[in-house]
Amino acid sequence: MKEKWKELADVKDELAERDWFMGTSGNLAIKVSENPLQFLVTASGKDKRKRTDEDFLLVDEFGGAVRETHLKPSAETLLHVEIYRKTNAGCSLHVHTIDNNVISEVYGDLGQVTFRGQELIKAFDLWEEDAELIIPIIPNYAHIPTLAETFSKHVLHDKGAVLIRNHGITVWGRTAFEAKKILEASEFLFRYQLRLLEYKSKVF
Image 1: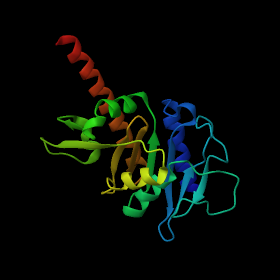
Image 2: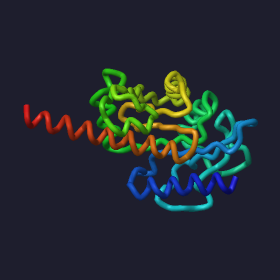
Image 3: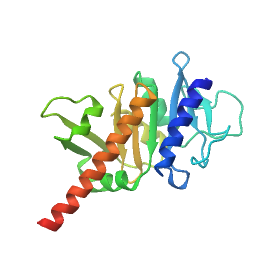
Image 4: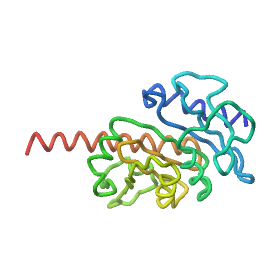
């Protein structure tokens, strides 16, 4: 488990450098074992810009702590449960950024945002010239079990991404590297799309 802890801590440090954990927001998880299903998840309310021995705790297939601890699992732990329950993903990341929040609001009524002809959709293994990437946008239910149930409908493959309207993005991949790659590509696409919309509004 030490190796998995360090791997997740390294990802956290890298995302913290990008200032993607405003106000202690966001949560990260990495699978430790398949049977029984156990994974490390960020402890709630921690400053993710700092690296401590209490950054993560081990939880089970229901999102509960495996060992007695004063730490509380992140509020969105049930989203990670759905990912690991339904796929072979090994790592999942959830961050709140201005770009992903604005994109989720701009396209929220459509229930999705679509990208075509963008080089970075290849991060999702979409290599065809006319490939299309669709990222679902779901409502930001305050009741986490309802949020998890809605989120689960879009967890169909071993890698993917889902936006929660005015909340953040959750991505996952078979490895921590793949999950981070998908997150980086998604954030690039969001920023590009917003810049493009701004440009078009000025020109037209």
